[in-house]
Length: 93
Image (cartoon, one colour):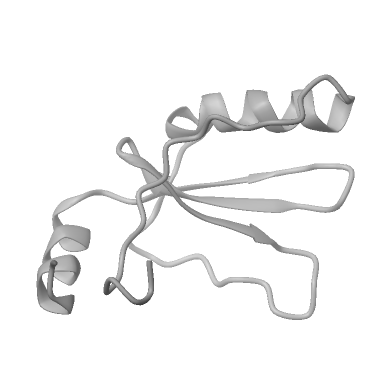
C-alpha cells in the first residue's frame, strides 16, 4: 500500500491535463494524464470543479475517453474501456 505522501509525490511528478467537453447532459470536465483518467466531473451543476493553475489544457490524453463518450451519447455504446489513474489512499481508491 502506498502512503499519502507517496501518492502526493507521484502527482507532483506527473503533469496533469484537463479538457472541458460539451455533452447532452452539460459540460464535462476530464482531468488526468497519459497514465489514465482521474476525474470526470459535471461542470454545470452547483459545485463545478476549479481548474488548477498547474493543469495544462489538452484534449490529447482524453481522445479515447471522448470517443467512447460520443458513442455512448449516440446510443452505440453501453460499456466503457477506460484506463483510470486513481490516486489517494487505499481507502479513497
